[in-house]
Amino acid sequence: MTVQPQQMADQTVLVYASDPGEPPGVTPVRHPVPQLETQPFPTAIAQPAPQPDSAGPGTPAFRYWVAADALSSGSRMWGALVPSGTQWVPSVGRVLTAHLDEGVDLNAFYTRTGLEFFHRTVAGVEVFSAQSPEIVRHELGHAVLDALRPQLWNAAMHEADGVHEAFGDISALLTALQLESLRVTVLTETQGNLELSSQLSRMAEQLGWAIRQLERDAVDPDCLRNMSNHFFYRDPVELPPDGPANTLTSAPHSFSRVFSGAFLKALAGIFRQQPAQDQAALARAGEIAGQLLVDAIVAAPVVSAYYAQLAGHMIAADQRRFGGAHGRALRSAFVRHGILSLEAATSLTAAEVARRGAGLAEAMPGGSDDQGLTTVTVQGMAYGIKGPLVLNAPGEVRRFGIAGSDPVGGSLRPADPEQVATSYLEDLLRRGRVDVPQEYRSDTAVVDDNPSRFTTHEIARSEAAEGLALVRRRFA
Image (cartoon, rainbow, N blue to C red; front, side):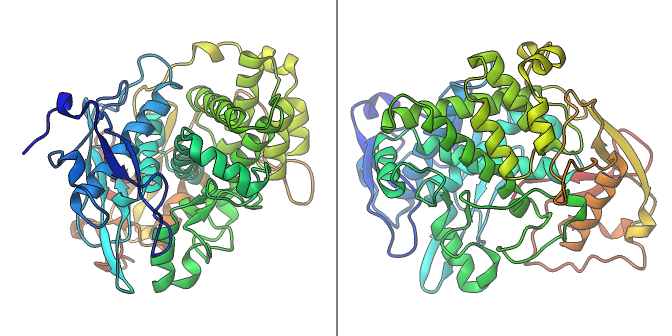
């Protein structure tokens, strides 16, 4: 029986407030019945809502309410920060629909039509990705970022993927900060130093545990990814395509940790600037950091060295909104992770921001998928693909002349768009993330058709040019 919204008005449901953690997991808590029709980001779950009092851990009803609570709170949090008029990309439709169990896998996807979650039994424990609020809010973050900057969906650049994965983890973190109980716990756990590893910084502990049972070095030792880290920026075209979790690679989830680590330090610095270091101040710091990130995402041009532009635009947004009150915290965080070189950070003065930042306040979310991108055509035969292949490379003009740190000193020179795009394609192929239909494969194709290896991209007939194109199908 489907339960009507008015019947739920004064009821509560049993949910996990945070990730269920390593087995045996955490204790569920009661939250008000979530409302999925949260504007401007309404969501839905593919199955009918069960009775609010019918759910216990390990049941489909419990998973439904955990996911619904995570979707509702995430939509509400982002809805308060994004510009008026922001909405899901057209392919999603009015409502973003979540499918809670699409089969056996330790994964979750945003597909541009909805969210997909999976399950797998590991060491006798049944692990459902939809039963983790952090994973649900991470995937929701992909959809929110797609609404703000749809150009990143098909951009052939490592830093676009890295921002997407970092934004997902930041989505989980900022939504968690909506809970007073979690804020109190984190402040106690870190003694007020938010840069330290904590329940807030550790992403998806249960899923990380499950993956670790199968491939020990694929994830962090205590979670899937930890935003409390010291990874230092390197141009991803110079990084290996894959490697163990304790190394930095160009793979999206690995490279994302540079930006998410800097964001955590920026949040910690903003928190230290609050008049009192209590749970209310932590909530305020989260709001400020989230707003600056949204402003930067909307305004920053899509270019190579994209991380640096986002960092610069967060500093510019702070200058516009708060008179530069949090500039030191932001500069320090981005310098410590190498996203901004020392000379880049110090060049972003109030006068420079005012001179180059005209129009930042008028920047609008959305736009066409190819806005700001330029096409690069490569010879597909070099990659085992028949015919010319079109890639969407970063093509906008930099607003700020800034870049990341060169480890030997000074600033790195950003790679040119063609190098960025071809390096990205090669890394996808090296990791086996591209589905190449049989009719497009040459005799020397490198595709191995391993059914256990998921793909994120596909080679398809180009809709905008002659030949073939690299097309994204999902964020995983």
